[in-house]
Length: 244
Image (cartoon, rainbow, N blue to C red; front, side):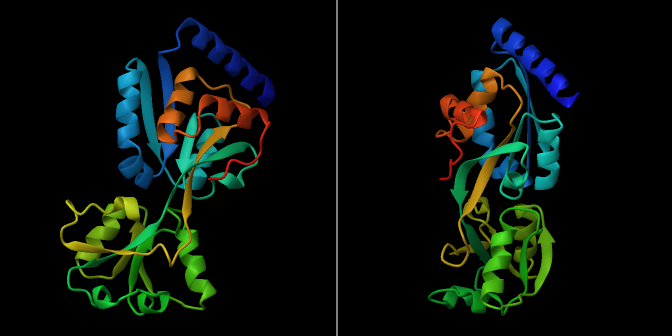
């Protein structure tokens, strides 16, 4: 029954694309970090190219995003964690990014020539909730050194993390893209690329769902290497590996 309903939806999508390729609705499910830092320029470019498409952004945690795509409530899911754990989804790599460390001006870590995990573990830490923004890589790095940091606050929002770092409650670990020197003038950033593994943000699609032309366009704006041809090959199963 689910297959039949999906085929009916695909036929409707094909008919809509044939009649009018430049109008319709596109729903993107994503996390706060992606919506706040990675997607604004993409959304602006997309709206300029497809002004008659109604674009909706739904925020959630990665499992919620996966479920939204799987049940058809979202056309695209974008997140760093979990999307590649669902067999019904095609999770393509969008882009890679690193974490960074943020501290208030004058913090003792700024005097360290090279910040180590051991040095970080001496301070209370403020970082992401375990379901968000590469937190898995942070936990694994400390565990590999048998370190047990005191994480005093876990948030889903980079701005919340930075706010509490400014208040002096701990050292922050955030996505490097979330640090803006012009906005975050009370904070200083330290490179953490040697401490934590590189993170990959993925674009998730329902394998059985036919995509509208403007959906392919949105994906290509977000990740230029994911052209329509590449995505169609991946959906058809012609190629299985698309790692960055």
